[in-house]
Length: 369
Image (cartoon, rainbow, N blue to C red; front, side, top):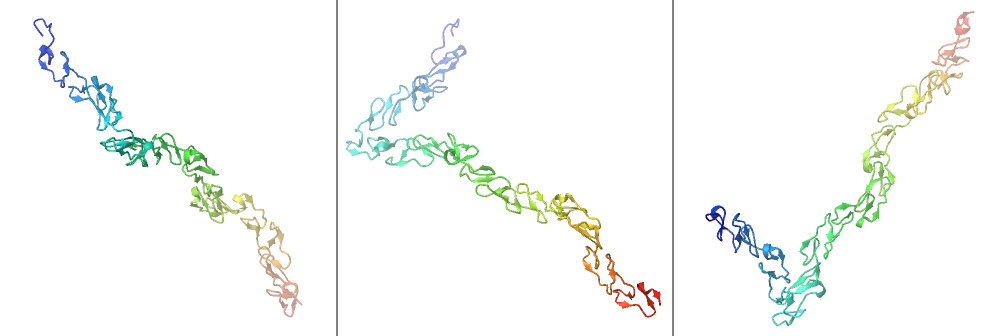
């Protein structure tokens, strides 16, 4: 300001022609150009309206307080404001000797000495060391907490607890890592993942208790037993759909047909002229309609017998596989195909039982006397 703009703004003003009033509080100075506040020791904020946060003091609140036994420090110069019963620059000294408390220091502290940080010199209240809690610091931290007075929550996962003093995680079986967030590596289980899985034919084992998780087609505590007949799949809980006494693959349920059968479910017999496993064998029969689809045994036509149906029926037999006996009498023979009788000369009839009528003789009684 001034005739030649050579003078700074007067105290409390800033800006063009010093027309703006400073808004700094608690003795803060403002820049005569920008109006930005420069706070006094112990204050902070855009307008120096706040005291330093608890635990700090001085210019720009840059210093940390060094007060003990719950004492607060003055936000301007850091002087400790001791609670009743304490003294010293940092409130580090008790009025009463160690182990005593009260107005006359005539009462013994009830705290567990080796688990206590301090006993209040006036009230006798115990301040517990890390890992201990309770009125007399005689109780361990409850699950999930650690530190002084057990006030800090554990930073652990998967059901883990933590050490009451250090906060180090104590992992549940099946987990490792600083915060117990990592499962056991494949093939290991249990506390600290130190146990080795003992499974056969397994996908893996449970990382918590080591129980085996069997792959398809296996069962049992250690996955050493194949699926029972008629079952397949994971845990052998699928039922085979195969017919005609066929087995099924314990892994994928595919039907394994018995000899004489084919098809997805083994419900189709071998086609005419074939037999055996997967119907791969060819029937070797001469005078036959077919062969047994399982064994390949020839089913001979009427009048034929033998392994390959290539032998005519023996005298006195006829029909399929020569299984019927002839009923011809008086030396008559029968046809191996239909069993019809061929009578000897002098006889006639279906069974050659009747002799020729008087006046005729010979084959079929066809000749006159």
